[in-house]
Image (cartoon, rainbow, N blue to C red; front, side, top):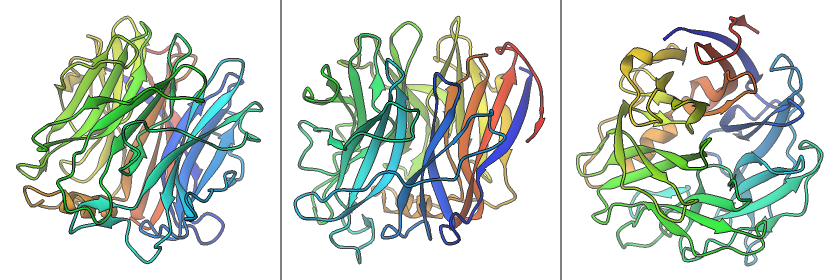
Length: 389
């Protein structure tokens, strides 16, 4: 497989003089051609008190980016203050843009986000807002009701998706309350709304191991050209204390039911799949078997397999291994490992010419990270070029 690529920078650390840690980028391409990116920024990766979500955009294919702005004010929930931790976007009909936001409880700011003794986390809730002017202004925030999971913290894994019939699909995963000593019942979950977020059906399990050994983290669902959903997972085998290959599930009924997880044969942490048509699916992912690298592979069979011969390198940075030996039976070491990452969390979308736009964070250390983009041209695209912007 032959690829050419363009590369550029979205945000260079530090932002506003003090926000050195920029991460969790999510990208959408608007009907106007605008590339819009939402991300989290803070003074340090583990500083939740100073964290904010920002929005920036480019109207010239990544050559120039607007000054990042913090557009969303986190509300109080049950008299508790919060901060927004993540934001992701989805195109709606009639040139509207949907933002999905993750709220984190800051009622006890002195506590770390993750409790290594219990594997619990600070409470998290989901909100949404709509823009009718390409992301310049936004409607009042509204809560997403995580029906069946209101009693546990939930974290978004991407935007609310618009399905072909107009239904909204909310994607999130379950966590456990901060001081809860019971076993963590981790699951990837999805909820549906048929009235633009005014009400939600009971959420359904997308992937879950009843034995609590397999952790199907960071689900990355995408609506495919035939209307089905293909969903990829960063998969931890807690029983052996090691990540295994990316797993996937499918839904052919709008997320009401899902297949059993299957092995894609690719080790790593994925972005959402990109449907290129005619059974071709691109997968961008982080390979952490050695020093971390952003890579891409191509499937010719609708995402069942991604042959090694289709692999190409998108980005790497001079750094050592960022993985550690993890104690079997707990996720505490995996959480500690994540906090040290200085490269990762790619997002990927298809551009109108069938090229692939990728965004990710990368830096010299965990507290000094930029946001970057890459545009991938291959045999799948209508045009090919190369270079650095």
